[in-house]
Amino acid sequence: MLFESDAARFREIVAGYYSAWFRYHPEAAVDAGVEGYDHLLTPYGEEPMGALVCLNDELRTSLEEIDYNKLDEDGALDYQLLYGAAMLENQRLLDVEPRRPDPGRLLPVNAIYQLTVRPVADFSAALLARLRAIPDHLDGARSFLHDRAANIPLPWLQAAVTSARQGQVFLGGLPAHPKVKEAGATGPEFAQALQQAGEALAAYGEFLERELGAGAGGDIACGRSYFDHLLRYRHFLDIDSDELHHMGAALVEQCRAELKTACRALTGNEDIAGALRQIRAHQPPTRDLLALYRRQMQAAREFLAAHRLVNLPAPADLEVVETPGFLRHRIPFAAYHEPAPRDPDQRGYYFVTPPQTDEEWAEHLVDGIAHTCVHEAWPGHHLQFVTANLAPAARSLPRLLNASSTLYEGWALYCEQLMHEQGFLHGPEHVFLLSRDRLWRALRIVIDVELHTRGLTLESDSEHLVAELGFAQNQARGELLWYSQSPAVPMGYATGWALINALREGEQAREAQSFDLKTFHDRLLSAGSIALPLVIERCFGKQVWEQTSNRVFNEVRHATP
Image (cartoon, rainbow, N blue to C red; front, side, top):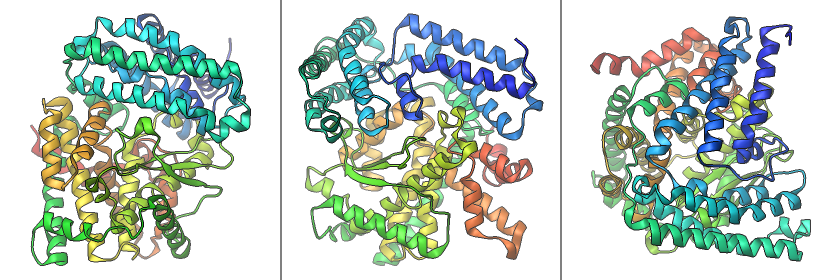
């Protein structure tokens, strides 16, 4: 078949690849707003994974036949993302996953949940099809995992047991869900499928706990090779894990010093634990947490509207809701769930986990909630993801499916600083919490590298987070569980924050009096939620990226052997 140009050939390759790739990632298809896959569950096992490896190899061969230099700037950016993603997925499938299988990845609970929050063409049919598929899916998962128990990390197995049991509770509540009731999915077929799916989840949880629990002892580390490749081909950072660790350690020391300064301003001494107790004494006046979060979220949005800091996208609905039960052991505090790209309402979900103990209530500080709303909502995650969804260039499948924490988390952490600079988070309590949260994110760089490349254990660092930051035990455990299952994601917060600050400093120096903060922010958010180095190079130029990278990493390049 003849193609009129390399650009046309690239578009054909992308379309053909994803039409096949989504068969192995149907939940990603629903999240991306691609129709035709919402009735499927994610396959597993040697045969489908072997086919996926072949698909990725074929993609890379096809891409290598294209003259990369004949693509326009957006096409070249998508090319880099797609090639890197295929390479990383094959390394994960062939090297990483066999060494550390995760029974939680085989759970189909999210496949059901996402249908309730994503627009799909035929909700009732998709829901019924996925529910009916769950018993066979989990029966096969038990067979698949039976001889792999020794390689399963015990914390992952325990988390999967909890997810299975809480997932059963979630399914039990589905008949009362407004979307289910509105669709009329309440007949005997639905009831039978729901009952059988719930029973299958219960059996899977029992199987994991009783038959595999005693033998589970796998290593959580993904390994240096994969971690370094994630830095290079997911986040497009030109450093390795040792250099990143060196940068993170220096940032931790800087943030510790800033926290002590903020503590002295607040209390007159450097007693971090005492300052936390003082702030925690100012508890929310009501235990209607959702209402309090909604008020703080609205206050942040109104501040943005009045201060011309960034373009406010529309529509951009955001619902503050309780964290779904099956996710609460992973989200001990709060989190954000972005809208589907083609959702006409651009409705996101701001999860708040209901506290169960006084220790957990103490984490929902009145002053801290304002920080969280800035980070998760305005101008943090919600504004950024909606802006990306509404930008034509950012809606390509390679960009939608290859987000980088250096951008979306780096931006959210930068927003906390921005809103302090602009006067929204202005009190000494806010400065203390801002400094504490920045130290937390800097520690993530160090812990991320050490967990996956240097043999650090979850137990040792759980105590570290409790002692250093005053975390509750369950929050520390939830944090580290997430770190272990998401290599090279936690490091993106503070790394992205440092890069955005370095970029802004450079642009302010270059443009001098003509520098406009709103224009800078709008430009930064125009290319999508992908690797920050690619965004900076695309939106500000290659030379600007090189200068920005040197500002942040030049010292560690010379210091690390």
